[in-house]
Length: 260
Image (cartoon, rainbow, N blue to C red; front, side, top):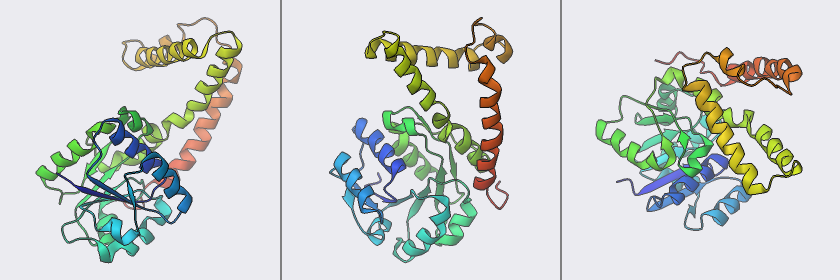
């Protein structure tokens, strides 16, 4: 059992993962978090008062070290903590771009896991694809799966696919949340109470997704099932934003080396 988990980075991702553990009553015995932003640590402490906020070298001395930093600062963060990593350390990267081979080279540690985290992990409904370095033993892989089970699904995938999951499952909610919120607000304007509006929206979103992805109809058939499409004249504009902006982000987060 992993008793100490140290997070390098105390921002949004760390918060929603801790939320998932707390909700499931599965918080590891000791969680340490290091972050240079005092405001981030204060927000974390307000939600999770039992979490210890510590200097980076103390977080790095944990059994499992979680690198919850953005890709541009990953190398510098690893160089900072490298002297403080225990000989038997194992590490988890939550960032796209940096491969298992590069992470091992930067850190001097071979036991790496990469995960692309998904915000619904906060409520146990995450989809968090994982790739393991060869140095991660079978027993430790099973231990890791038990540790992250409260977050939701963590399928093992080829490392080369992780950046695609970052675009689709990790960032995916941001493509829709603002639209769902405006529907929520309009529902209130149309006379639905908050509880009724939310119930209808959740049912609609789940049902529409299942019809599109789990049924036996072609996508064109699904999109033709409803005769009135109030936003039809704007669809091309929305599709254009997807086609222009997402490939640009994809180009930035793709690894510089070829992953296996």
